[in-house]
Length: 405
Image (cartoon, rainbow, N blue to C red; front, side):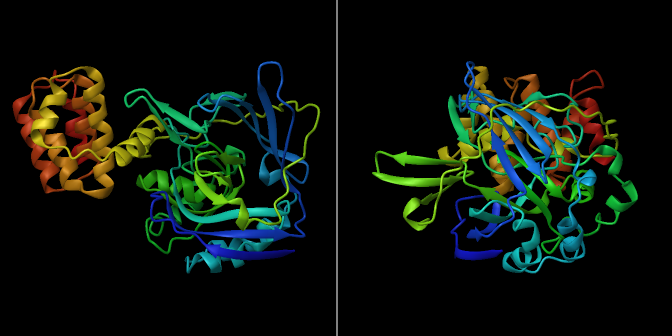
């Protein structure tokens, strides 16, 4: 097996990623691989991520880029003979040094893949399914997932956000989760040098988690994002008519095909895939801070707000609050956006929402939840002011009181 790092990528525009490199794998084993069928009469294509011939994730993907795919659990990685995972476990559980060191540590896992080009990224993932549920509590049967869509259409902005590695899907059974083992990571999960999980970018905003289920549990208990090494295969080839160039698309990263001279199209097609069903008892979500994480809808709005970058002033906020529900709903996306770029602006918007009589109930509830998640002196004072001005019958009373829990 030979893995060549071709170049480091400029990831300044990608908020989900710390660093990334373009790599080329040759002489890979091809036992961690995706197989797929042709599109059926409903314009859907079935595909399965296999490890040593056993399914890890099974999916039915529509040709429509804004439609959600159906996803189902596979066999369970703990039931598959994978000595490569055991071999690298001590290395991936040690403090993170650099992306290149991490790639060297997990070479045996990368070597299980098919030959070809991969972007390997040091990224931040949410330990949820994109709808405020712990990522391991997915249905036993194939079900539609909002996170499994290449382009999420945000109705409030009436535009789409391109998918990228954000949420995770389990590849092992819930019975393997050891809470004591997960607590081992609690004190280190938020640090820059935290041990990395290993994920394989699947589709849309969704990654399959190859290693790190206990790290993800620890992150959920902290309300933190999970540091991960994400392996991103080519999703499709894009012919850009405007630029008159052809690009290989890795998630939302586009790389000119001229830089991939050895590219070969994926031709692993089979006639039929039958979904296998496995039963898992749900994991208790008590004590997890799952509402700290954005849903797919909120994340897409954040991305659009980032591109739009309207400079919100008090007068603009008051104007939006006096208009229709769509303008009001857009404000929550700007709160989420500024929370990552300028927290003072987020607090300013929240204050206007809580003091403006035109604010809708859902927007006030979002604003109060935001203060509970982003504790600081200013947030605490706004919570106190809110409780003074309202009584226990108010819709946000219990949420505001939870600030000190």
